[in-house]
Length: 136
Ligand code: TYD
Image (cartoon, rainbow, N blue to C red; front, top):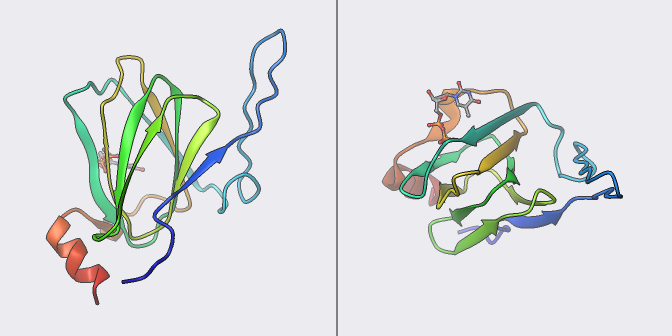
């Protein structure tokens, strides 16, 4: 089993002043990849579990730009749970990590930045298949 990092918390620069806040996320500067895709998840509630997959190619950064959620990340051996609740906080998730997002607050808007364009064939959506593939 590799001992690469499961994930990495990132705090983004926040240029707040008396007009409000402005958070900056620059690809390959504030995060370790060039951004090819952004998507966001909202309208999920506290009963929903999303994700439940690993990606062979994609790296991600997750940011709750509104509200809060949790993300569980595992490589099949080690496991971490990260709480996201501030627009300036993010978590970087390398490729080949199983991830599950849950406990979405009613106002949660979870923005995801990705290192790739979408390709459904690079997703592993079965946990046992993930364990087999990571142990190869
Ligand atoms: P899904 O992977 O189930 O979302 P999550 O794991 O983040 O909860 O994706 C839901 C649907 O959206 C699925 O039909 C694939 C599609 N989709 C895209 O077309 N492009 C994308 O970038 C993403 C993330 C999903």
